[in-house]
Length: 199
Image (cartoon, rainbow, N blue to C red):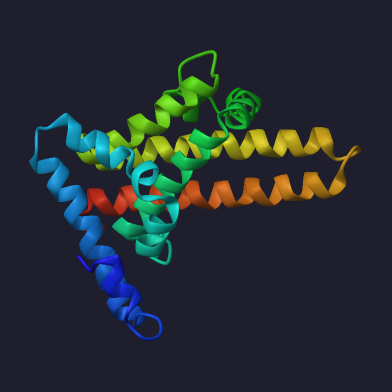
């Protein structure tokens, strides 16, 4: 893996093909390495990667990766976990607002009821643990179901605020659309993983 100090000394931006190769190599190495070990401390360190290394480091590795790739899926999972970790109250509220409209997604997401900040944080951690120790496709599908419920909740939240703050309601609606796209991306990645095509 390219050391960040060495990467900083390279003039200009990385070639897009090299950037893609670095993203796929690092993502594959992390997932393979964790799956080959039986050490729960390794998995815990990987789940908490953003807390240790920072979201910028993870974004630098994977945020430009296509959604239908392993690094693209991992980026979405880490970004989702970081949002849940930092803003658990809001995420729990949106989950509560959306959960009744998506009973199947509720079962797949697996959030304990009643969903509070601790419960949504626990699910985000479980999803990432599942990437490294369980069925990766199931982990991606859980995250997708979680995003679908949050998208519905954000839409309900936007509707309730529309008369009070139309700008905020529009931002919530855009956020809901983004969560819906993320859910679709994660479901597609899960399908590719099952076909042996997620790289």
